Amino acid sequence: MAPVAFHSSAVDRQELSAITRDLLALERARVYRRLFVRRFGLLAMALGGVGIGLHWLSPAATWFSVAICLAVPMWTWIGERTCDGRLTRRLDQIQDAPSVRKKVIKSS
Image 1: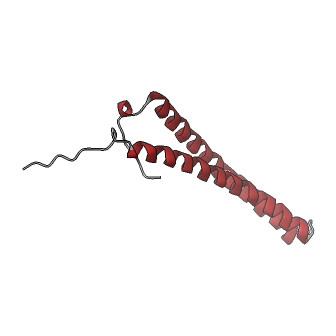
Image 2: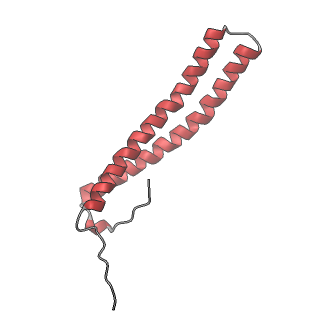
């Protein structure tokens, strides 16, 4: 997402509230994704080490456990991409509005 700047008076109050809500949802999704990648990644490595290295789990149970641990961060990444897309669409609508376009003044 590219940084976008606009004057808040050029946007309707409800629309500005929706943009802020979408931005906060995107940041929350990023935080959860980072946490889940670290924690479930470590859990997947631990289960892989226990299953493959120590032979405490069957190969099918090891791979299934690792796949489940890796599915959770993937799910949160999909949620993050959804929030990012929603925010991008809102900001694109704002940028296309005639009141937000910047006028270029040429000096002679």
